[in-house]
Amino acid sequence: MTEMEPHDIQIDTLLRSSMAAPIPGLPSDFDQRLMRELHRTSQPLDRYRWILLTGYGLTSAVASAVVMHSQRLSWGTIAVMLVGSFALAATAPWTRRAIHPTTQHSA
Amino acid sequence: METDSQLVARAQSGDQQAFAELVSRHRAPVFRLAVSILGREFIPEAEDVAQEVFLKVHHALQSFRGEAEFSSWIYRITFNQALNLKARVRFRSPHEDETVLERTVTSQLGPDQQAETAQRDRVIAECIQTLPDVYQSSLRLYYWLGAGVAEVAELLNVPENTAKSYLHRARQLLHSMLKERGYSND
Image (cartoon, rainbow over all chains, first blue to last red; front, side, top):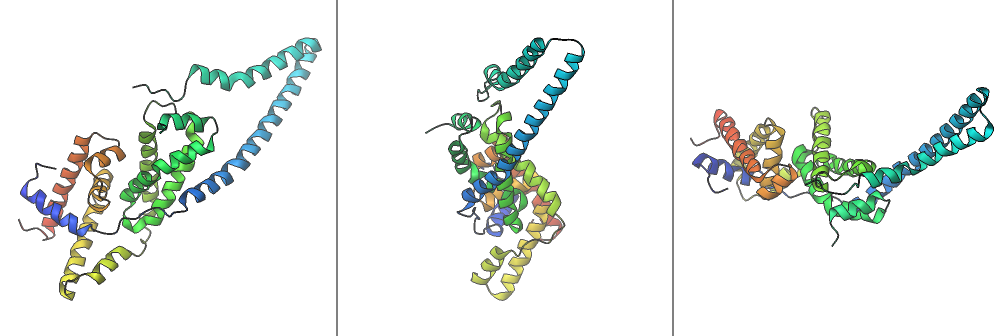
């Protein structure tokens, strides 16, 4: 701050004296509290999501199998199609990571 | 020492230790930025903001692509989170400002001068609160929290020259406001 005008200097001095106060800090147990909170909020959510996703997957698979069988597809073909779909869903996260490396900087 | 990018990569693959290290690295600047936006009447709220920011970051970590620096990303989240909270607490009475009380009691000034100084400080604080958020934050970071221009620029995600101009413009606006209220020698 080298090129200060006179009134700038006046305000600068005023602010230095007016805003001088103890600097606050985070409590020493901030990390512990954060980790506890993180554990509390993420665990049940993950479990809930997992149950929901599994239920949805199984229901969809059974419904699809019934519909496909009613269209006279053989059980063998239906099984291949369902296993194929599950395999695709299971490999999606790895495929995504391989295509978009997440920590590479664009700059 | 590992870079933020390396720690982020480890945290993204589920390493909680890496996330804890990121928290430990960034908790102080995140809190300083939050407190600079909210002001010293809302320090407990700034702590809540810091916690919320890290919870958000943890949940959104998988979506972080690394196009920007991790620090820029987390400071942007902090800025928005603090502004949202500020909008909510605007009409709530602030906590007792003990810092001012302590300064008044321990001061060497006489009672009249103490009252005058306290009144002047109150007017300055009121004027600061009417400034745009980035100006308020710059002033508090620079004059209260002792940050240099480089730190102000980093926390507000702007170039150093912009941070300098924020401070300059904030001082100009304050000068005009104080002049109107009779607190200037001009």
